[in-house]
Image 1 (cartoon, protein in one colour):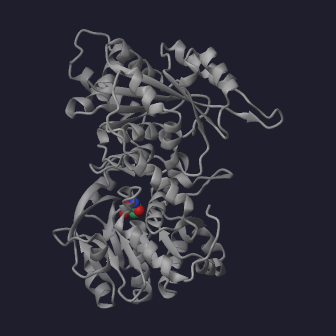
Image 2 (image 1 turned 30 degrees about the horizontal axis):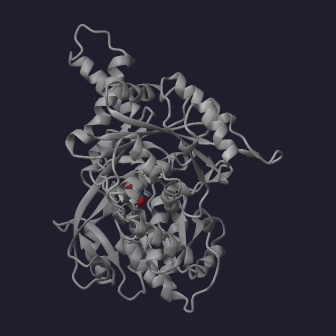
Image 3 (image 1 turned 30 degrees about the vertical axis):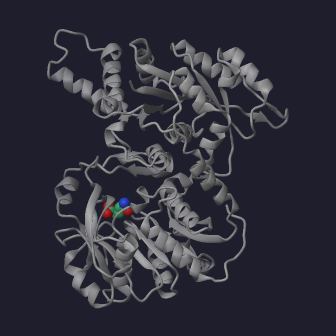
Length: 548
Ligand code: GLN
């Protein structure tokens, strides 16, 4: 019988509930269990595709084309699995389904109500993955914080699951602040948060406390008493230097053993050593590789949000670690180069540059200047989606002499739309059907023999995930190739250009896809591996610096 671990959050948002949920999944997987995860997002949107990255972080794309909250990325990376889009549940989807059923007469004669009809629909979706394949554990993370209006029906649904006989454990993640003036860790917010949860009818089995420093025994006892849990079941989740070390932090507190004991399961397998060795190796790497991410989704109010590019960052880390290097990321806002063109020389201080995906007009000019600079100054470059489109625009303008070449996303009137709509997109945009209508999910590409890209992948046919509406205009392929640009991968019908490279550059590679969604610790994405390889050769001997 499948076991559900329900992860809820309290006190504040942005606690790292996703990392906690992924880490619990990881220790169970390392003990030999088959694990998957579900993310519940209580917003009314049907998916994350229409959310602004600076507000909500990156949009994660699944193999089957779902546009989902970035937490799904943590699960895929930690658990090294592909998760289908049906394992993201939002209020929009649930209400949409209930209303559709009501219109079809499926509730004929009944008053359709939040309880039981909405909660039944939620439970149906939560139980579905385990009905379709055999899992030992399904980790279910409920977004938001206890006390929010919007997640209350989800909490009610998972409460009902235990009542109905499902094997369920509840893990509540809270925040324990330390007031600087007092120098004391305060447990009251946790007490209140658990009180709210118990008011809904959920008694947590474990309380995971996020804090800067490890929680001491006095605070553990207090939380245990006030929250009705055993002291041993208060798990300290203090800040660590590396998110991939969180599973080890839990393991040191025997969380896996405690979970299994509560569920009367045995441990018969242990692969923890592989993970421990991985983390301790990383901690010993001294040589630094510095990669500049030239993007635009950094600012929200007065704070900076690196979550907009989280998968790109993680991919850089995976590839650097695989090369025995300590990654250092430099944030570069492309708009700076528009205001202060001389600042472009700051690119000399990095070992490699990534221009990631993006939408809309702002920051485009700065990105094109970046690409021209790295091309002319032989700085290793990896372009992702928009980063490939702009590499084509730059090449068309500055090498093929097509002066006003552009993407029609940026300039509808350009005489040389070297990047243009994918034909199917025309009607979609005319009818303003923006949700879930891009070219989404994994598509195959056939790689050209002997190219950098083909050598990096080590095979001829590969699948990468996509999220875009525009593509290289087939009418310009010959002109670009005649001037030296190589399209090293195309769709099987050869119409869509999926990869490009410049053979006379140390590493100038770009793709229409998003290989960052397939990178995993210990299994880096090939194009990032190529970037790091080239970057580490850029400035020999390597500099010694502390990583950030
Ligand atoms: N805006 C571009 C397009 O839609 C690029 C998208 C992206 O970078 N993911 O094609």
